[in-house]
Length: 450
Ligand code: ADP
Ligand code: MG
Image 1 (cartoon, protein in one colour):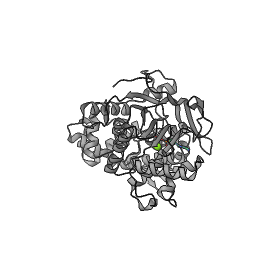
Image 2 (image 1 turned 90 degrees about the vertical axis):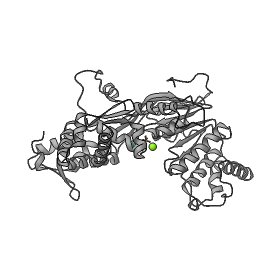
Image 3 (image 1 turned 45 degrees about the vertical axis):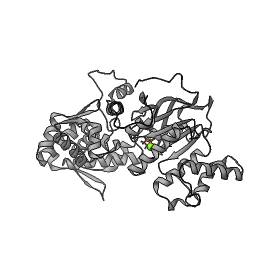
Image 4 (image 1 turned 180 degrees about the horizontal axis):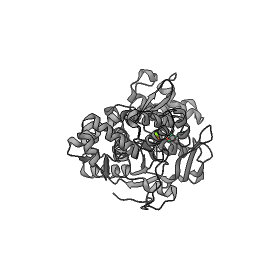
């Protein structure tokens, strides 16, 4: 495995993104930065995986590269020509399949050709070929609702492949399928690619699944979160089909775990202009340090399992043991690290002394410890406790905090952030919440906690 900025000797560039930056503006005028100066090139003959935590901007980047949305700044070109609308070289496969329920398999597959103005007889024979290639022979006349999830996604693939695109884009195409069906489809896709049977020149796949990226890709681009930037680029130089149990495979998975959970403080420093390693690091705010979306119950589960395994373990082993997807494990890890209850080093995670105390204490003591750490390290929890402490009756409407959060989050994300903070605050007996009234009140136990 090597880290390269680009691959000389690779095929011709098909799609190039240059300094793609994307922000969304909310109705009340707040700007949410999602992608920051992302550049990459997709070449003929390669499968590239775009890997990142959920919310890191993967789908947004894919949509920019497909020409479905325009970047706020920067540009995307297809074979050297800047895009001005949909990318003519791309077809997409979506997580949700996105089939038209009133059309048969055959008609769904023909759709793309119809848009290109291909004559009916030609459409028919090309669609049948794609349907055959993807293992749907005999289902031409079926409707999507008559098919299993795996079969529906096969239709999604056939519809994308029938136009013989230069680039096949896939946005988490396997994540709505059960484990076995997903693995089966992945293997078939690799088989088609390796046998040069898939009528595509390149593949770009978005995933949050580390093993999937290592299994499929020639190159992995790892996106950081808030905002999305390319944090690392890895070349996966292993023959296909790949063996998940091979030591080189496991070593790569470990490396990627380390990168994904590595400190992002350097980026935060770069944003605020604070020199890295400087003593005067700016205080994290509810917007610069979002709360990972986990429940205190899930977090204590993780800490207890770690304690049971002697206080430390490798994250891939932990995910395996718990039967967790990376997307389930990483937010828990992030929360434990944020709260100074665990630390990561490469692919390993270890309890801190406080984490150890938490895992071994009785429930009341661990709640109190959790409360102290939440106030000290979770900016939104701290902001809520601070604001409640400063009001006369120790009561505030949640709308106040939602307004604050809207400066940095979409409506949905602001709500999720507040819900998480409320969950953490209630667990730590810092404040109480009246959902009907949308009201927060400082808990008697928390008076003077600051
Ligand atoms: P990922 O695919 O990595 O999970 P997305 O690209 O879907 O991430 O989203 C990244 C961020 O951009 C999220 O915070 C999401 O809420 C926000 N976002 C995505 N699309 C829009 C949109 N159309 N309007 C406002 N915010 C958006
Ligand atoms: Mg996505």
